[in-house]
Image 1 (tube, rainbow, N blue to C red):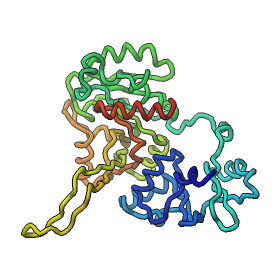
Image 2 (spheres, one colour; image 1 turned 120 degrees about the vertical axis):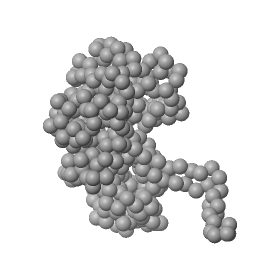
Image 3 (cartoon, one colour; image 1 turned 180 degrees about the horizontal axis):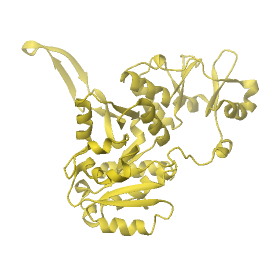
Image 4 (cartoon, rainbow, N blue to C red; image 1 turned 90 degrees about the vertical axis):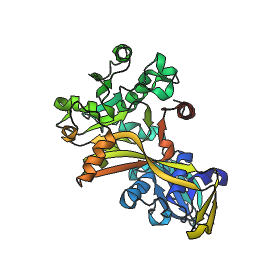
Amino acid sequence: MNTEKLLPFLISPESTVVDALQKLDHNGKRILFVTDPCRRLIGVLTDGDIRRWLIKTGELQGMVKRMMNQKPKVIYRKDASQAQEFMLQHIITALPVINSKGIILDIVFREETANQELGQDCSLKGTPVVIMAGGKGTRLYPYTKILPKPLIPIGDIPIMERIINRFLDFGVQDFFATVNYRKNMIKAYFAENSAEYSLSYVEEEKPLGTAGSLRLLTDRLAAQPFIVTNCDILIHADYGDIFQYHQDSGNELTIVTALKNIVVPYGVVHSRENGAVCAMEEKPKLSYFVNTGMYILGSGLIQEIPEDTFFHMTDLADKLMAENRKVGMYPISEDSFLDMGEFEEMRRMEQKLNLQSE
């Protein structure tokens, strides 16, 4: 691997979390190798390392050197032919090839064939998923004058079917959809396309918000944790890991969040008293975590939602936080979150999926 091909996988120890997440989005391998200016290996950084750092500290400007693993697995050039066997033995997906000075010469990634024995991921087997599919999708007019938002195709597959297919990859078999607008079209489509799983419907007689309709599922979901997702998003992440984090953290509610970088298209002026200018920034970039619209609710939490009342998931989160109860977030990178709520974002989703050759 030449230097140009290595660069997307290398990062400086002084780089920030935001820098690292952007590199991870670019290389698509969920791993970076931390090097000095001479390409000498000093650590390894995975998306999991970043996530643990963010959950612990919330610092987006934290430096890579504070969260990296300083004892990465390596293989020397003379042993490079044994890399695949080494990765299987140590349960890792990437391995840097170094010389006697510790300089990275190549990176070997675990071959798909070496991973085939793992079989299907069943980490969410028995976990129900609720898809909030009752909205009118007014931001997508005129498409939604003809089709309900869950049936708008991304490529040649409706967005709701893509969401279901993603959960099927993690062993989910039980789905619920809250429906209202053009509900019969949704039912008719999935009546012909749901042989592999169970899909039940909750019919809203009136709009109940992003959480209100969940109360109608109390008898079926009160006794176990479950996942809720909007019908217009795709999350590219390990759903099993998200659910496990929720269980291990003791959260009553976990919100899946995504990094969002916003560039102010103007020079920003900072001032003090009496109009005195103290600093200027040219087109600063701001970074935030945004709510993706995917949640994990703990056992019994559904009973906290008022009956027959318009109630959003944000109202539920506010209620819990006001009572000093545990609400947590599971952070993902910017490119791991795709939202088709508006035309521009829908086009971005299509482009991203095409790049992934889905």
